Image 1 (cartoon, rainbow, N blue to C red):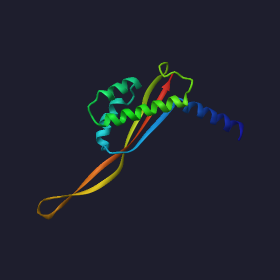
Image 2: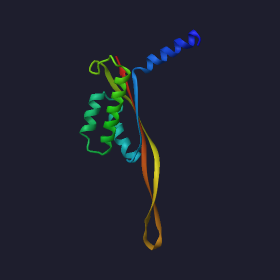
Image 3: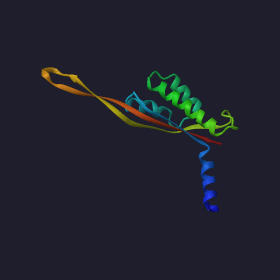
Image 4: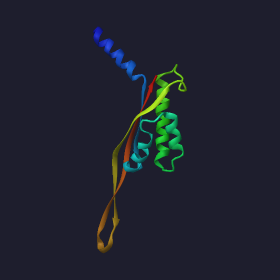
Length: 131
């Protein structure tokens, strides 16, 4: 590997050290309901976000809370010597995308049938520690 390429790779690796990512695939909550809760914690400091999720009454907050704790744990694994209380961890982004749909049929009057789409979602949380 050339010198410039190696230096660039080391610089990228150092930049990625402050970022941790956690993903949740095929959560059985519809994306619209999950986005309502995700909007509450986007751009917020991590401890405050955990408190928001803990005291929120929606079911989506439980799975987002677990996912946020996983992202924090991933950040701690990357930065072994760093103290989480000294760092300023922020939820950089929360992306909620549509997942697979379970398609079901519900009987309707006069011999008809209506299609029911049970939606799922994929969530990605990015936590960034800036000094």
